[in-house]
Amino acid sequence: MSSVQVVRMNEGVEWATHTCLNLAWLGAERAVPAARLAAFYELPAAYLNKQLQALTRANILTSVSGPRGGFRLAKAPEQVTLMDVVTAIDGPDPAFRCTEIRQRGGSGEAAGPTSAPAAPCAIDAAMRKAELAWRRELAAQTLADVIATVESSNPGVPDKVRRWFDDTR
Amino acid sequence: MSSVQVVRMNEGVEWATHTCLNLAWLGAERAVPAARLAAFYELPAAYLNKQLQALTRANILTSVSGPRGGFRLAKAPEQVTLMDVVTAIDGPDPAFRCTEIRQRGGSGEAAGPTSAPAAPCAIDAAMRKAELAWRRELAAQTLADVIATVESSNPGVPDKVRRWFDDTR
DNA sequence: GTTAGCGTACTCGGATACCGGTTGTCCGAGTGGCAAAGG
DNA sequence: CCTTTGCCACTCGGACAACCGGTATCCGAGTACGCTAAC
Image (cartoon, rainbow over the protein chains, first blue to last red):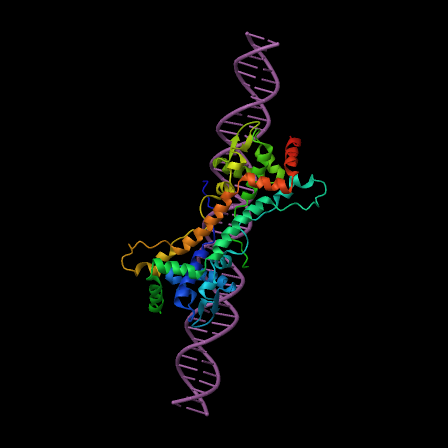
């Protein structure tokens, strides 16, 4: 009843990040269709396609249409931060939106000339500060960092990925 | 089209926090009904009531029924962090939920005995790290800190609040 | 005058509808490759 | 054998529907106050 998990982040973020990792392991030479990328994780292809389009708009991937087409990384993994990916999928807006309710009702009118430039909302500032820390932490981690972590704790993964995408040619 | 602001936080967080500030300025002696607290910001009373119930469940407020009833702060403002408020309203679950898609499809079966205890998901770890920074920042700010900020940049506010709640007795 | 009892009005609390947005799906536009035909 | 040309299959891209969770609302349970009436 009370556990309503509201701050939920878009689920496509997980898909997009994993897919970016796979694309990095496969190299930026050949393009991989969305359908194949989706099949690797048994995801709905059309919906993953939607996420990849968002990544393309954000210049994280490049897309090429037609046969032999697909997606590939637009930059080196060192150049793409997790913040970039999250922003591309989840949008650029902050989680906490100050709607300035303090200006309404009781506090608003009674203060004579409303023109008094109210100081910035302290609550908004505090929330913004916390979100900034979150963004800074996300921006500090690149795809290359995540790749390094995976390869160190699970060295076989890159080969396995390459093998799978080659076999099911 | 692309700007879909997905990570949005529950709007009630703003209402709840502002209301907590007002309750702090009014003192913890008398209880204030949800209807009056809502009227101050011209908010829908029944819905704010819902948020205040959540704060009560989290032991941030105490509620008393009947005439002369209402809500009051359960602790000193120094004892309540913004993290407490956000958790009470938005729920305790993290924004990023790792669904472990990496276990499915191509990577899952082919690795012989699936029993191999896969290392923790690196993406999940990175996201969790960022969220931890966010939580730490929220936990570092108490209601008292926010109050101090407001009173320093806008000294008249506390009196104005008290006056309004006294006048509309 | 005092006190016990009752009615009433006010408040929280949870159960109940409504709506916007994420999730999921589909079809059209564009493009490169392949094959066949002609030189 | 080489070149050209037309067709076709494959891919992205954005438009369309469905389901879920936040938004908003309402009515019932409980309580303290105030009034009345009896002692």
